[in-house]
Length: 416
Image: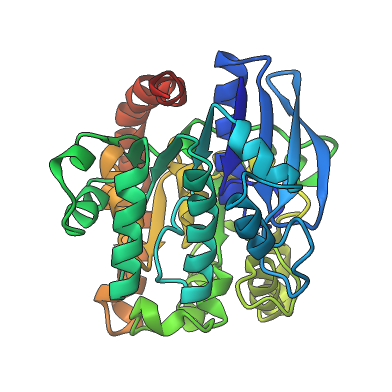
């Protein structure tokens, strides 16, 4: 069995994308333990990598696929596109796609949209078109579709939907988005609604960490976590497209000040998208800047979580907390799936739809609705004060949801 994975590599710095990649590999390992796996990524060149899942070492070949001015590079998307018109030619990655039994594509979970810019959208299209040109079945895994703002995006998305072998969504709103592309009934029959695959990500305890001792110590009930979204904090170039009226950076400062002034909690600042200080989307730089603004007398109560932890280890950290607030959706999937009371700060439709599937949509605070910081502050504070009630509710609904969705990836693979 030859399988190609797209849109869920481990080299993006986005732990949510890594969580999806891990969950896909885990499903493949259970159903097709001897499968040859190829994964498209964003690192230059190709290499053999190894991932440990359930004590087993999974081998996969990773190939870069990105824009480059050097056309002859085999990892250049334009080179890959050219070679795909001629059966793959010398391009090993395109040949792997051609020889695959099917391609599993999750588009980063939320990137099948032009909301993040035309260049990024076109890159996702090029990869999908290469698969279809090779006449390899394209399986769209549970993800969010749209919004598609431009006529061009709507037209291209419609073409992909019509030619895909199977379409899985992780929210009901995406079904409506697909319907609004004026697709035929034959496409509607290919649509299935499922859960975000990261709900099933196992939490793995970090080794030999002082942080672990703190989280498991006698004051563990006083530990809360906050994820600070670098995309919003730094007002990235796509910020205006989110239509947020409040000032996110100020809100995060006010939330931390309130907890330090009105409670005895310890605050763990948790990054879910990693990057250097020049990266405007980096949570790690946003968390560090926020930490630097904390008064010296309070810094013993505010801790930066190690950015070297992987997706499983960060989920373990989040699972130890008494309450969590985050604007990266997969950071809040980690908390809600661990039955941790959560305030999910949303800047698009995806979080509401994803958590509606599991019955936790009341944990979502849509930042786009409010014009003043004080309105968001009130909801965040109310979420914290009602944490015991929320925990009882999550303990009631989440185990059953996880049990029903645990074999979802296997169902997807069998339909393939």
